[in-house]
Each structure stands twice: as C-alpha cells, then as structure tokens.
Image (cartoon, rainbow, N blue to C red; front, side, top):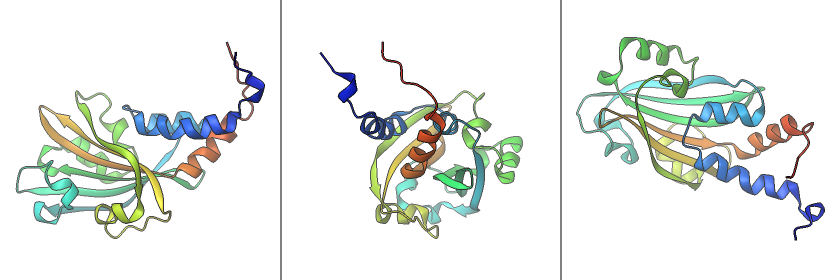
Amino acid sequence: MINYNEINIENVIESGLVDIILKNDGSTTRLLETLVGNTITVGVDSQNVISKGKLPEEVNDYFKRDTQYLFRVVSLYYNGEVLSNNVVVAEVNKLNYELNSQLEKGQIPLGKLISKTDHIRNNVCSKIFSSNELQSLFQNFKLEKNMYPVKQYTIDKEGECWFYVCEVFHYDTILKYFKISNSNKKLQLI
C-alpha cells in the first residue's frame, strides 16, 4: 500500500511536467495557458522570407520546392517572461491571404490560427537538447540556458508539409508559474 504522506509531490510534478510538455500532441498555446492558468502573449522576434537554399539543414528535407519560405522565430510570454521560443517555417505559396496576414501581424499563435483547418501534426522529435544543438536552427537568436525540452514536428495539409515547427521550452519558468497557479488547489487522491 502506498503511503501518500511520504510521496514528495514536488518531485512528482517536476518529473511529470517535462513528459506532459514533450508528449502533448495538441496546441502548445492551450497547454501552456492551462499550465500557467492564464492567457499567454506572442512576440515575433524575427520574421523573414528566404529562399530554399537559406533554410537550415534540419528543415530542408521537409520542403521540396525551390521557392520562397517564411522563417520566423516567435516567443510565447506570460507575465513578461518567456515560456517558449519557436522556429516556424512555411512555404509562402501555401499560405492563403488571411493566414499570411495574421502571421505577419504576429499577435495570434500559429496553433490558434490553424485550429479550424484540417491538418495533421507529425512528431519529428521530442527530447532534451543543448542550446548548441539548436543554434543552427535558431541562427541569430540567442538561447540563454544550456539545456531545453524541445519538440519538433510538422503540420501537414493535403499530404505535404505545411509548417515545420521547433518549440524550445523554458522549463524553469513554466514550472514556476505552474506552481503559483496551482498553489491554492488541493490535491485530491481517489
């Protein structure tokens, strides 16, 4: 029989939170808003249209056409602190006018923009990465920490890659706000 008084809830939360983040196959924005208990905001750190030859090596295989690509780095914030940095790549020709306009404005997270669109999310990789391993993908953007939980996936539409996404999670910040948002809730064991 388990003695629940002896379980260190802090350790259970911390070890399970990384798994929850990395195994989530739905909206990251919705997940982060649930974890911190409030709405998060978006900030576009950089956004450029580049040729296929300028795509980072990690992304090149997901896109076949020699055309123009949207390459952007976005940060998701809560209370002025970064919860996640994301690289998003998309073939410009596959973006309709409305979606392209919303992406350019940079105020609504990608997941919310495409939530009503028929698409498939394919996990490429979910694991802990060092900032050095991510540098070629994030290019001129500086990642502050040494190690990050990272999720890489494609969003496919009509059998082709519509978006490539790499999400880097600031675990310590997420954990801090998760604990604050849940500090008044009581754990009920059944």
